[in-house]
Image 1 (cartoon, helix red, strand yellow):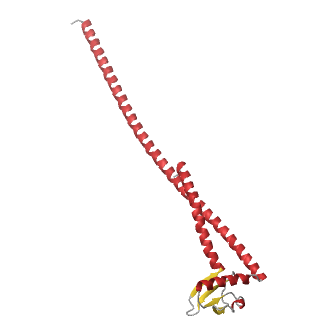
Image 2 (cartoon, rainbow, N blue to C red):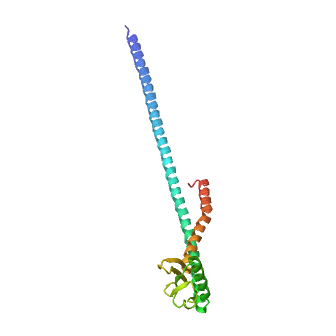
Length: 212
């Protein structure tokens, strides 16, 4: 074999090694690129999943806070309305007290007391002991249904309490403050019933605004 043949074969071998090396390098490069792409894609899927979960948590927390805020505002509104109702009733009560005080000062309260006593005696329908405020019993002693008049009611608004003469059981408590307490309670209940549609409308609007 000549020197030229040896060199030719050597060059051919080198070329074969170079080609095989390039093929392997290209194949390994492609494999690594594909592996990197797979890892990146997997990581992207994980991140996207975490983002979805995070968004759900944020939306859930936001909805919870909005719901709590809505309940707080509605309760604050109810409390405010109740407070205003109490203020109105207190103002009415104060005016009543002033008016009654003026009547007592002018001496015109006697006729009111007589009407209250007459109402109580009519309901009792039997001989009675009548309790009235101090100084108010003189005009009542002439009534035949009254067995005894006691001036022992500690009520600045006036009125009377009627007892059965036989066993001193209370028949009728017909004081003005008792009447006012009943009236005040009834007004409070009416106010609550009046406001029910209002609060129902607030709830409906809240749901439409996605606040519930």
